[in-house]
Length: 127
Image (cartoon, rainbow, N blue to C red; front, side, top):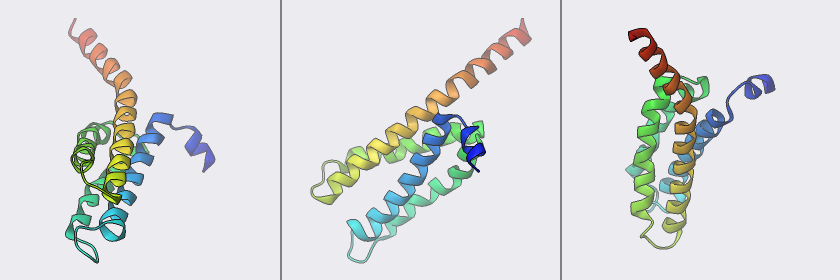
């Protein structure tokens, strides 16, 4: 198991960890830390899209990483909007924004050389 972890790109691991952390944060935030309504709210469902990305991120699927980099922007935006709230919501928003930004940056860093190779291959194939 450790070999499979060591064979992965560190940016891929951090991005996958960021999605898992965001999933846990969204569930905890809307279920018991500071839900919109006592006892939880339907806003907990916002965590579900993250589940679809995690297996592809772990496998290093480039297509998944591309759409996941757009998906994570929704969570960063939510964090930035909710940062204006008070109490626990403020701290949860800070955490959501930080984790989301770290995941987004790692996805971009991981994808940049892949995109450059694809662009070079396309250019050399046409020329």
